[in-house]
Length: 276
Image (cartoon, rainbow, N blue to C red; front, side, top):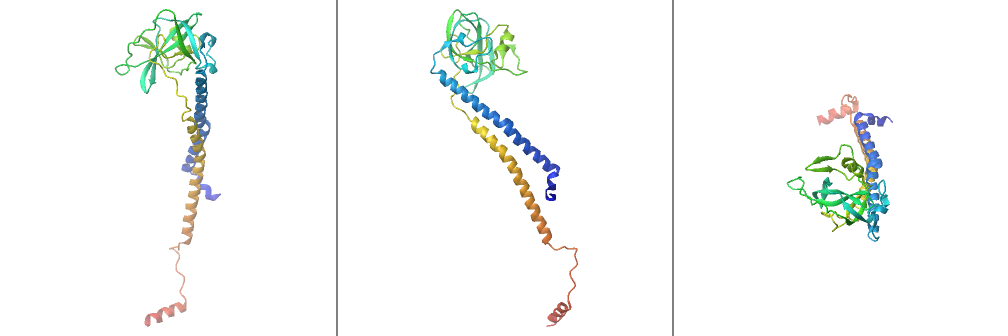
């Protein structure tokens, strides 16, 4: 055990702490995060693929007081009613086709009296981030085809605010928009299909591939295994170098030790050898 006392030095203790912390984060945070995204992406893709072969249903069949069921998200629906005039809400800091965009959210009063938020699509900012002119939604009764979506949620510090004549939000969160506008909104929202009344730039469906999340998750698991193994190798290499240095020190002559006395035979041989 004395050979391992060097591991109690602060530098080695700090290295061990970093390695253990990194491995712990790999197994409990980083890998589960990526594997969870892989699972949720796969479930989303399955729902979208299934919706392509199913007929649209009236939106009233899927909405209630709360959010739509997660299994119903991305279902194709129809909605008959009218847009609420002068009630557009801008969703900021979005990207469409890798370019900045605003998305336009407009409350829609259904023919049964309930109101649901509709994502009418996107518009591009002008002069940097300036809000462009936005085409108003049509008046009167219309029938929409859309997909039912679940609210994104929000985070503290990202509160709605008014700018450029519009209420602006960072997330499509129905309770937050309802509170900011004072409009009683049903749970979830609608994402318009292409070519619908009031539609702006169409927001395309996500690509139906699993993405890199599974490989990223497996990589984090591998890193979590490799980190302690790497630490073990470094400890082994240090022990090997210490043993090598100790062996070299033991084999080297001690410069402070006086030479052994010469024998008489060595002295005579030395003397007569020189006389010849």
